[in-house]
Image (cartoon, rainbow, N blue to C red):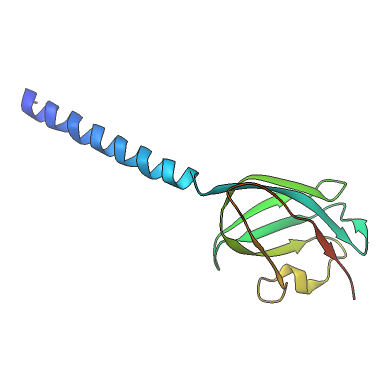
Length: 119
């Protein structure tokens, strides 16, 4: 391999690295953190999951702890549909089409509690 070819390869590698860094930094600027509690009929949902749907095929998810609490460190700062899965949770909350739950995430820290009912 000639010096010219090696030099061009290094320049291309550097440009690719800078492009990746720039796109990664702008994506990081649009990230949010979220935490909260899910209750069912006033009681913490002791197990289950909460899903934040970006679109029909992609989501961010978090497991609920024994106190119904959840947290996720990296979600997109945008409006998303929310679904919740767990024992005793009415089926309507498990579908993005029927849950009726949405949240507009802002950059930085977000707290949202979901109070579900079996009615």
